[in-house]
Length: 292
Image (cartoon, rainbow, N blue to C red; front, side, top):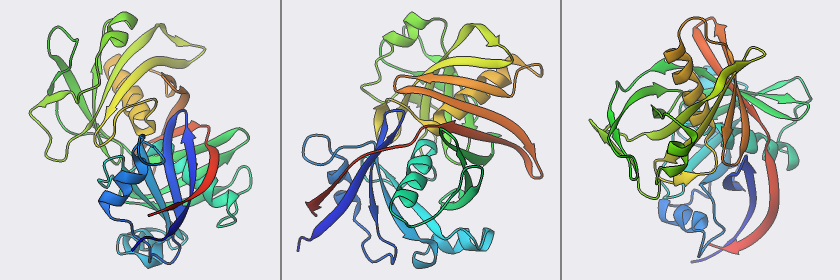
């Protein structure tokens, strides 16, 4: 039986999403339905689907409320193929913009809003020109797998990093090499992580640091979505990897250029360890209704 679904299309630096509201948690689309929504030929089209549901109304939300009772809303995020993901850095900024525009939450400039995700509660801060999300404590996780990608002449070493979801970052030698990588197929990781990983290819700028800010360029293949114009958690992972390779004198502020725009990354100390924050725009493009 089909029914009408109201949706909104949004994006953060070209990383685009289909969002819909389900406060009571009684409209959980199947993986196949979510994949159909994200299909760029037969659906709305997007890198992922985001359901806005109150944390109290879904099982995963219980952990969020236990961590922070003010985390009223849960970002139920899935990749373009309908598979669930722990976290989405661009998506959480667009999600908060969606909540605000639809009167589901309020957030003045300079204030923060806690959001439940599968990787825990994440605080989103409203800026004058966008939003910044504290992605929590990061870690070197996933070892150093070998990465093979189309149009790269030889396999390259990668660095595993977790920012709530898994990443493997690969350093390349030049802008030309970055442009030549063919990400129409998923890179092959050896050993392969059991849950998969997003794979970022990164080139440091020359000079690397200008006015105390590190600068890098990045392309990404996201598990479950393919190559995307931007990946927020990937931008953070890429900046953290280059900072790790650069050593203790590396900056804590980073400018990450992705095909869809520019994102900011800031590393800072917190009570539970070193955190990474992601800043950038969040745009809502259009609303619509379709049969699901």
